[in-house]
Picture 1: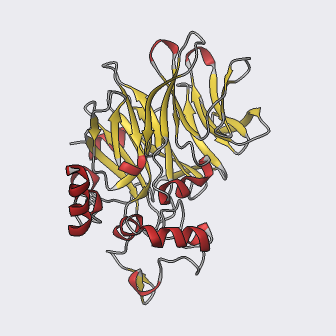
Picture 2: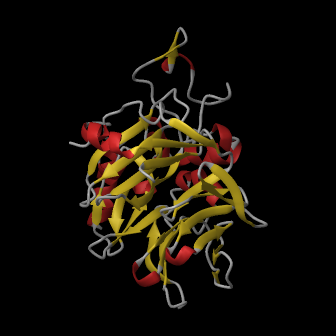
Length: 354
């Protein structure tokens, strides 16, 4: 009863879960143009994920997996459905998620089904696989539908290395997207719609992010790289709290034109966020809310931000969903631009790390 009264008071006063405020990009998250100005390594339309085995770069692109070796791309696997996630494993194996429904080890008979929206795979302890199944109600491509319907059916799954049956480590999550095994033996994963990283045991690692986090991978020298595919805005936060409006928008409006986060923006005059509140006399306002955004955050071993890389409102390199290290470079997938970027690690650490 007290919980119900507290929720009613929060809604009435616009506080707690009913607040529409968004944390600012400040401190280690202070905006810059590093992603926007990054070198374009390769054009990658329909790419969904990146992976590396320490020697080569692997790209899940449409229904194929490409390998980049010495800057040249070659196809190493093709399927009859989209590849929604990949992971390079020890021993040269490659794990792939097929249409979000199945996880397979390429070139073997090992395959597991029973998933709905697998969006990330990462190595766990003792040869296990950590799999995030974003939503039980919506496919991978309908992540905006999951957000707008306040979805909370995501799962973190562990597939044992001894070919045992998958087991759920965490369920009922607001879009699980990306997991990692820490050096201390913990498992962390991103809960996108709650803007945080949490431990599989339930305790939060990093909360109140001003963005929707996606995949998290280990960084050399300790710590992690966290990608975020969209920045939060007050307008979207407001829409998420207006049930009647959301229901009508979902029922009556083409999803491309919803007031919802996007991987890319600025391509059509039908977008809801444009005009004088975005630009004045053709000039983008410095305080313009981002319809789409590009962001990578360097985390320390404790999960706290050290520095960040941005492509801001008005930029091109938005919808960042993956980042991996290879050969002294940080490779970043911008799904919004359909492009793989790269930045020199030594320069990032020397200039940005405090």
